[in-house]
Amino acid sequence: MQALGIERLTPPHATDVQVFVMPVDAWPLSEVPLAHATEVETFVTEKRRNEHLSGRRLLGQALLAWGVNDLSAVEVHRDEFRAPTVRFIQGVWKRTPLPNISISHSDGMAFVALSPSSQRVGLDAEPVGRTLAENAFDLMASGEELERLREEPVHVFRAWTGKEAVQKCLGMGMHLNPREIEIPIGVSNREISIENSNIQLQYWTEKGYHLSLATTASGLAEPTPEDLLLEQTRQAMQAQPDWGVGCKTQRKGA
Image (tube, rainbow, N blue to C red; front, side, top):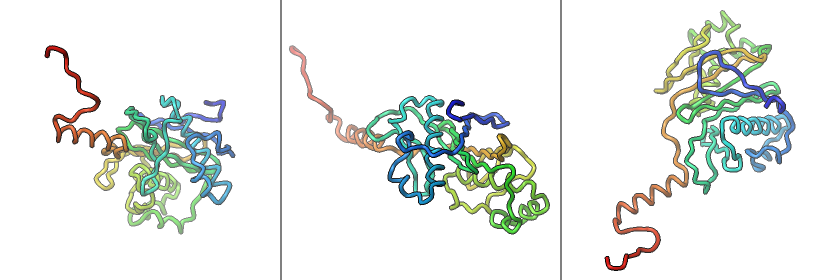
C-alpha cells in the first residue's frame, strides 16, 4: 500500500480500529470504484472534488486490506445526517459483516478509519501547525471548558478534533452541538458519555497531525432490502404453514 502513498497510522492505545492516510490527489473517477458520478458532479470546487475522490479511493484500499475482496459488491450509503456507511449492493445477498467507517480530510491529506461492525467509529485530524483564533473558541466550548481552553490554548486542537470525532462516531455531525461535548483537557485516553452512549476517545499526534479517534458500541444495523424480503418471507411461512416454494412431490407407494 505504501507504493500508492497509503500508510497506516498507529493509535497509542489498544484498539480494533485500523487507521489509514494518503495524500489528496486528482484521481480520475474511473479509478475510484466507491465514488458515484452524480455525487462527484455536485462539488463546485476542484479541491472538494479531489478530497472526495481521494477519500473514496483510500476507503477502497482500506476495505481491501480489511478483507473485503470485491469492491464492486459494496457501496457507500449516506443516512439523513449524511453519515457514511458501507453496505452490500442490493441483490448481492451477502451476510458477511462489513466494517463501520469514518472519513476525514485536512490540509491535503485524506484519512480513513475502519472498525468492526460491533463498534461505531469517528476520526478527525488537523495539522499540528494550524492555529485557531481565540474568538472562535466559544463556537465549540462553553463554561469551564471554554475558560480552560483560553488559559491553555495549546489543547485547543485536542478539543477540536475530539468533538469532531465524537460527532462522527454518533453519526450526527453538526446536528450535535459541539458545546454539548466536553473533551477532557490534558488526557490522551478517556471514556465520556454523550446521549446515553459511552464513547472511548483517544488523542495522539502522528505524521504532523493532531488525531482524535472515537468508538462506541453499535446499535442495531439498518435492515437492507434483502433483510426485509427475508423477514416478509418468514412471516408468510409462519402465517401459512402449508406455504412453500417450488413443487410438491409424493413418493410412489407412500
